[in-house]
Image (cartoon, rainbow, N blue to C red):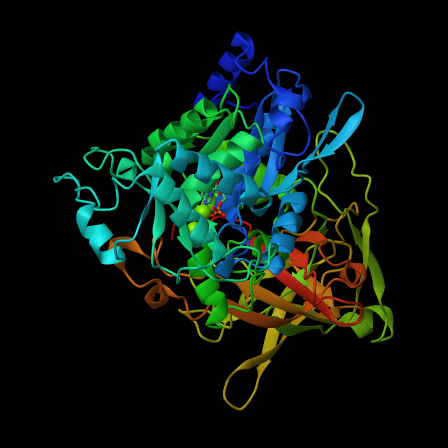
Length: 608
Ligand code: ATP
Ligand code: MG
Ligand code: MG
């Protein structure tokens, strides 16, 4: 593993650990129970972070950055990271998404268990489990004069809010007394008022230069069935109110979020201080820290927009290998370790930037280069006939065994994987572009004899290339169909030149090409994925990202593969020599019906 560079979050945590900022805390297990703060057992001075997705879609590569950061910090500093479903928005949330998020976090290599004093704790929580506490806290804020029920219309509220240049103005309902407000709040909760007719607001400062402090809404009336609490509630807390409380109940120490929440921090602190004053929460309170979100070229990192691509049928579901969802990256063939390496390399900083998609691919290549077994595959097959084969062996059906190592020899020695075995016979498959009837300048692969430009009665010989792992051959001619399309290439094998034999270098070859023998090649569907968008920033300048969709983002090939690949298991990864990294599709690949996805080409082609 690469050395972990420090970052501002590590420095903060190291400082807090040294200063014992959280040493006095007690931990009581179930955060939904308000009594746990006072009653709990002493918590070893450890940090608690959290990853708080809303279960309204599948996680994407941006979330992976946050997962690796939060779970990684907890692991590195002997702390705990909570997986918390931030499910306060009932209309958009579903169990399917909860399950997909669990699976994605696990797949990335993290879990929500902690081992402390011989106990195993499961740190997987739902914000909806705190609805009772949140409501009690709201009643407290009303009684203490920190919140009021506002019956203005949404438009009036917007108009009174002011803007960056203009202070807001107080709502006519702002001066209502706590007892009346409490009665209204209880009516809201009891379902006596229609959706949208009133909201509970914090009473802070309508003239604050920070718009988030101009009496933000805390609760709204919304008759919607929640995926966990059902119809128990017709009022739901706003995200900005719920989130700090969730953190505090779980005794999070470092609440790490993306930069767009920086302006929310004063409200975060205001709210928790008020509730601590009222005895509902204990010090030390969690603190919010912001880092730059991941922006990755050629993809979208927004659940809502990814949902649009899925729902409009622009891709084949949430796990389409072209999507930057973790389910999509997994199906594409990305390894969890490549994604963790990516998260480490991009680090955590406080300034927004764009990361080149090529750097994600680079992590995949670095991960697989020394571990993915090699194999030969012909993705655009053209037949090659060895015209002297029968003459050499007295039998056109004769085959000869060849072998190549599963992995190239490394300085550390030979790989533990068994070498690959495959046949050579009279008929082979080669790549169509490894042959040119008339070679372009500098072409090093197969071409037939060429007439001499000065004396057309003379010919220069056809080219000599090595069949990788086998013999040198010399091209002698080719066949075409009526339209001039090349249908077969002819060559002669040069005996005594087999790779690894003493005569291997007796004849010079201009290049080595990959091939498979018709006698033992296995057929496969190979899916070649290109970027989903033609533009590095599909939404730059407010553009409609649908306009940037690449219509050719998927090419399906009927390929011939080396026979060792017939045994490939779903999700097993290989390097197809000269082509790139490929994975057996986790859903569609099965014995007798092989399906491979290209994960990445061997070299970066994104910048071109
Ligand atoms: P989206 O807009 O895709 O729905 P979100 O931030 O609304 O993203 P959440 O489910 O609330 O989605 O995200 C959970 C956590 O993941 C949050 O803490 C958020 O900061 C983090 N996160 C989301 N997108 C990114 C990103 N692009 N880079 C880094 N962290 C991210
Ligand atoms: Mg969110
Ligand atoms: Mg969102």
